[in-house]
Length: 424
Image (tube, rainbow, N blue to C red):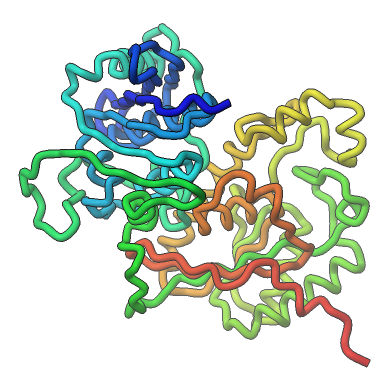
């Protein structure tokens, strides 16, 4: 169903910066002012800027669910309006993933415009945001339509927004001008029809889209390796937290991956704590001349709960409703398991730490299907459908370069040439 144009009023805030935070969004019919949808949620402890972006994201998601073709997003956040209109640069790495998520949503519409309004004209969204902040602070109340506040971000360089102190609007400056220009906020437009407009695309990358200038600073190279095959892998069974060892074939694959990765001259290997990854990591480290290996617990596979060890067919037969809900939303977890949104949050935290600790180095990350897919989704600023369309083979290798200024270059995805049998 298509309903034409809607108006989104969005807001967010934190009691302290950072502090207990929440957002609110209202979707209205532009002719009658009728409220078509409301969204609000507590975010835990984060910052004003993150909460404001989350309000916009929730509003766009609601508009998409209503089938809107055009959106006018109204906010009293000068920061978000100017950045998403493409007039201000996004300097802080913690905001770039949120802007990328907005840009992905923009592609669902024919047109999205951004308009600044004074706070007194944004009372409905402000009230929802304040109720959500109360909930975050443990003061009771509820937030209608609650969502998981720290949901999928978009770009690889700021893996966890909470890991960076985002302070007010002063560190974000208008593009092409000095800080504190005093320029009155206005509105901007991003067109959809399958691609983001200039404003949204600039916001998503933090750089003008036409700027492909080579960087002079060294990249941090992330070599993403899925572990080798296990018995459950071969049987196409859900394999999450169960500590299943490599099969004989998996050991051969790990050795082959080691020979492939050794040519990249890695500085160290970081592994999931599960034995199938640690064995793969050890093979890579040995092939690379005995480089250091460390374990990062947050690189562990998704917890598939009661589905562990089952095939997809088993789950379809035994848990049809739960499976449909899981496939429909990354916020849904398998029974007694973990959602992809939860996996994404911890993986971003791990990647943020690793990128900071090993800046300018080549780091091999040995992990599982879900974490690696989420890393690649974020690196490509892709939507959630990417997770279900990407195939990652055992011992497949993907390479992502990232720079301190926010640049990202995905160099390869699921390279398996090293696993091919030798030519007779």
